[in-house]
Structure formats: C-alpha cells, structure tokens
Amino acid sequence: MKRTRRTSRVGENVRDALATIFRLDLHDVQLGWSSISEVEVSPDLHYAKVYITGLKEEDTKETVEALRKLAPKIRHLLGKRIHLRYTPELDFRYDETAMRALRIETVLREVLPPEKEGSDDEGSEAEDTDDEV
Image (cartoon, rainbow, N blue to C red):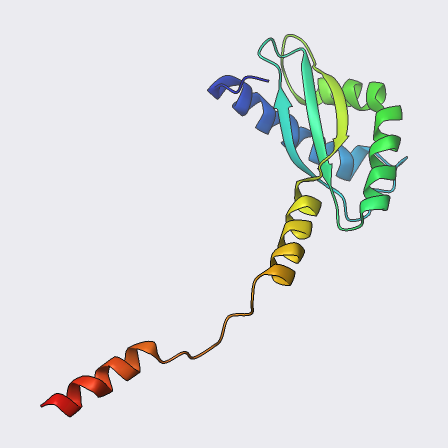
C-alpha cells in the first residue's frame, strides 16, 4: 500500500486504539507476549493490515488466527474509539520480520569468523614510530 503522511498518521491512531482495545475491551483472546508491530492503511482508509509479532512464533500465529475470527467485533470497538468517516476493515497478519532477522543473524554468526576483542593494530604502529627516533 502506498504510504503517505495521512495514511501513516491514521495507521498510528489505529495502532494506538487497537492497543487500548486489546488491553481493556478484548478478553476473548489470550494475547500473551504478542504486540502490534505496524498498521498499514490503504489510501482510501477502507482497509488496514495489522501486523502482529511476538516472542513465540506458534503462539503468535494462534493469536493472529483468533484475532481474524474476532475482526468484526474488534472493528466495531475500533469504530467507537477512533473518529473516521469509515472504520477500516481489519486484516490481521503475522509479522515475520523479527523471525527473519533472527535467522539472518544466526546464519551470519555461523559464516563469519568471530571478532577478536582488544586487537592492537594501532598500538603496534605507535611502537614502530618510537624506535625510529
């Protein structure tokens, strides 16, 4: 979706309102360690993709499925919290960004040699100049 200042601002407002709804109004779903990482709103403000992330991949995916089932109820609660002409339809998705970053970091640690701490490359150059004087 194309990002503009308006859609970014509305996305932030939707994210904040959803966080409040999850904390205060939604008792049907066990969110655990899940959180909203980003909300992308369409240019016409009719649709919103809500990305959910968490510590445990399987638990977070189950939470996303539960949120998808409750999307109409959550949308109704969202309409009461934000004041837009049209309350966007919510599409809850699992955010794989954190897991991808972890996988990349793991692969890099396996491939790259470990950095040596306290390497004295500069110190040896300083010692060489003292000998010449």
